[in-house]
Image (cartoon, rainbow, N blue to C red; front, side, top):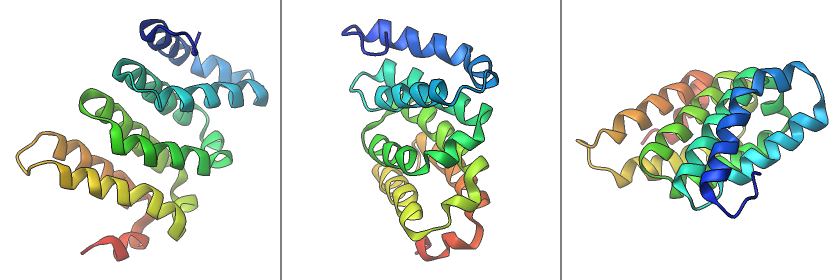
Length: 161
């Protein structure tokens, strides 16, 4: 039901899937994991914040349970992150930043190309610049930057200005 016309149904579906992520991954069915990832990434790009939030949480749990999935679909995931960071707000953004942090924790070495760094860092910097320094969201963005820095190390240097 990830394609239901009702956002509450889609959100509940992603929430339910997130509770079974470890079981799905342990079955070691690559087609099933790919299908799940595709549905979750599509859910992250919807306009409904409730669906965004639950899809981001499901992605975070999937990437944590199956780091190799993040490696195999690195470009697709980075593209979704790049698009989502630009439009997410509030709790959806917090969940997205958590998913990005989880992703970086598992994919550090694979993120060290200029193309991947641009997809990840530029949208985060733009989001950071949207908020005033006293906005609590800055803390969440900085926490995400901490995970990115830990993952890519000195490759982050060109972005410091």
